[in-house]
Length: 114
Length: 117
View 1 (tube, rainbow over the protein chains, first blue to last red):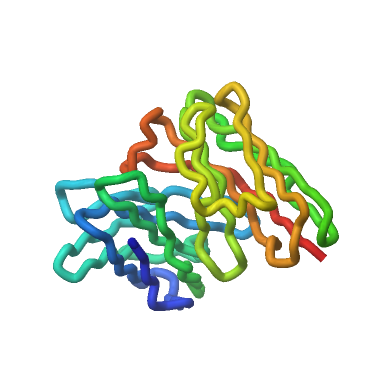
View 2: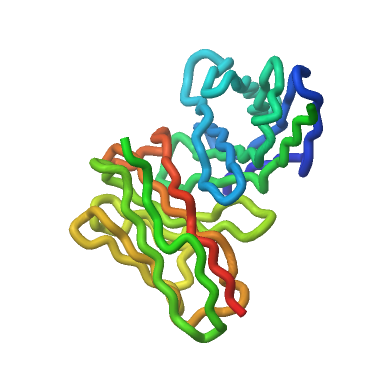
């Protein structure tokens, strides 16, 4: 069965500094990988996804993520953090084949300090 | 483009009562999902519909949860009777393609926060 690990419950970063939110996955075969963000009292908002091709994926609001097959990782990054980036971030995975559900990590809370 | 709509936004009930949640997906989206998100965890799929047929309900506690999607558009999720452990946020999501392929982006509604006392 597929799984996602987000090893950090909380990430703190100063405004203007680069940020990284880590994600590793386990899946049979090749993965589809997603990042979502959740603001307080709101649903999940799609940021970006990896399907195939270029390992560096660019998404909304200046976020990007790099797929690393050998390390089974899909870390979310942004060159310069904003206070408004403070939110809960979820990584999710589905395998290429079969109709298994999207599996989410437990989330990482990002706090950007002015 | 309007997003996924859900109602109510908040609900407080006592255990053993029943409750229903409503979802209206993005117009034209064929696939609809219901997720349960317990505090401190990521969302977990309860049920997936393609048009008005059930694709996956393997994680739906069928002794107390039920869901339907009449006419392939709106959907309702019901809990009867509710237990304390059902306290969670219930998220509805939809995706465009009828096949519900694993590459498809799911778009989420704001959720219904349920508290069972």
